[in-house]
Length: 469
Image (cartoon, rainbow, N blue to C red; front, side, top):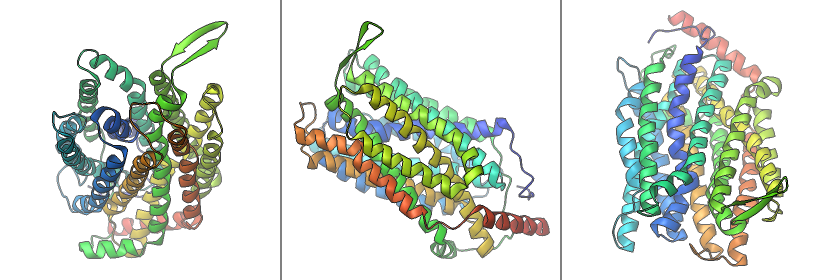
């Protein structure tokens, strides 16, 4: 890699598009995990909601703790393709294989199924970290320009939401198609196989279409202990860790409850439009809802850069999470026959929630710069792995809470729910999710890396790189 001026890099559209393919691949499985896996384990695989919640806690904590380890290893990787890009090639096929095995129902006893679920999902969390941490870190070495990073993060999340949208728009239909004769378990297995093949192909595209340009201004040799000590002293990192975990709790509770919400609360409905009646199954309505949710997330991602340019990243973050919380609270009061309002609220929540996601990643790139500015060492992989770690901790807590809340409110799979269990499902979709968004606002209030300070940091790092170059 050659040393470049931090302010001189303008990435071509083709490279931003290639980078977005990586999150298209990851997010197909992220959405399978966040929106379908709890439902799959309870209603298809046959596990209890409480057992799934506990499994999510244990396996995802391991996945989260693994992320900094992968990040530090990637920081110390040296190949002719760079530090981070090689992982996209060598981990893509194992990623696809383990993904299919995770959504396979074995012919085992109840205890045997639980052991199988623990093993396959733990492997999935491990392999997900091994490819996603280097992918996330790649953004930090493609350009040092703060504006380009926000743009690159926006492209990334367009890819992410496009991958998720592809899954939500097709998964239920593919499961029905492949499961017509052999049943829903086979339907899930073959559906995930389709997504797994596509994911591997898109990871290859990202490897081929991106470049690693940036290296530290000072090639100081640092130990793992020094890198960890630097991060522990990085106050903005701690703040973003808490804020990002809270955002993921919001998303996890909301995503994880949608299929339950429509199957057991909204149910099949006949809707009158222009003098005609149209019958929709709860599965179709859930698919439309999830697809609109992700589609409007994309609209929010597109708004992130212009809004941040006008009011700053911190204020944009606050606007996003506070509005998401308020709108989520309002959702609690809607009834099954208010589908129009339900979908309208979905649009508004989707836009407001989508804005924050590229801002988080752009802020982590700023935090990596801030760390280098303070210490003279650039631990890009470690900083970005911490963002992946925060995602997984939020996802862990949200997923575990989803299973435990279902159990606490008396949920039983594939039967009519009583008023208490329905209340629990509704609270997960609205009030409990909204509280996660409010917690994110409380954390980000204390974030201090504003645009003025980051301009100073960027200018001084550019000067150092120029001297070293």
